[in-house]
Image 1 (tube, rainbow, N blue to C red):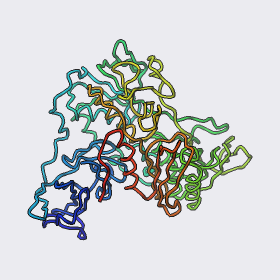
Image 2: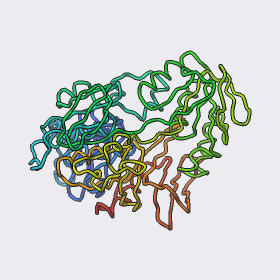
Image 3: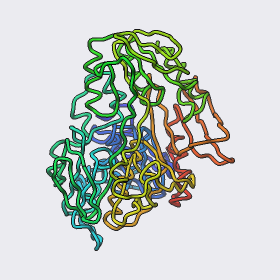
Image 4: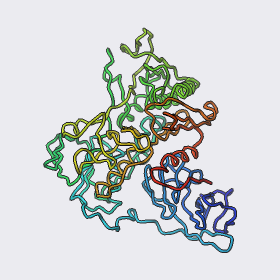
Length: 516
């Protein structure tokens, strides 16, 4: 419902009160609306992002795009369409009329067709069929984009998971904190796949990729022919043997099933050891501590996130966790587990009902290697996300691609990156030849503190902190030879969007970013 403290745009709004490139939130007929101005044009669109209902009025306008401050989803002000992940659905629009020096927001416009681009001219070389190996973020984003671009041939998604594509970031965050309905975790309602004619094959593993025969063979003997193939097999957890531990003592965090199992176990226990001080490990630690468990974190590093965010930011997150009662055992590993007793490498003994291992993942490249595709710490692709074999594409966690911002071949294990790669790969499957040049983005949230990260810095020679970490108000720049490779922000969501736009401007030649 519209707020009583915001302007009613149906009654008109003074032109002079909205600067060029600015926006303001108000209401029309009880609905929250964002009014935006681009020169002498005015647009009225829904105020909530269709991903997580982020407040779009607190975001950024770049050209004629409106970007969400939460997770950097992007919408067209002209059409309302979701231009890139993590949002897939359009935002509503209203007709705007200028009368003299006031603008009035009139009636709500009809909702866009689910796939408004479907009637556009199709590329002449569209494949006879498309098979997507993988049922995660990249796979779903690709299948959705194929239909959105009007592709009407067979689309098959083959997934080893037992669930339809779901919101994987919440496996280590919200889902572990409180009961969450399946509808909230599912990326699409079940009818979506039937209505879009996407054949979703669950609980199925691919045995081999027959590239010359153009068919995929499953472990159960089934085969799927393809005209084009997209590999989106993601990553698999790294498993550690713990001497003395029973299988029922060890839990991993990768799938929704993993999260369900942990949630159920937590209902009857009080103490847990989390192995690993990575993003997954500390998100799990924060989630379980918020439920009242005694949480010990064991990791060989001297400081959390030291390799990815630097010692000072790592120290901030360690102090944040410690202020909530999490106990760290850094510079150590788990030596063994005997019943409810966990012994560390220095002889320290901890009491724990079970162990959660969050020590990282590795790209699932076995199929690609067996098929003879070029692999180098990931499946190597060109700027169009095409592998070393023509007509075979890859997207998501397995992909190592040429990043135009850093000038390096990189691989990134982030949710939004996977979705955006899936979208670009789908368009290139259809022959659009679109370069993948999106700036990598990810976020983490722990004990209510949200960090946003844009860019990619595998190494740096300088870190500059603007602001104050303890005040939850800062921007941390990671530089190499004077160039900003990445920026992490806390409490500065608009600045994160601005910096992302600055990084991508040379690549896309977009206008300078503005915000209201």
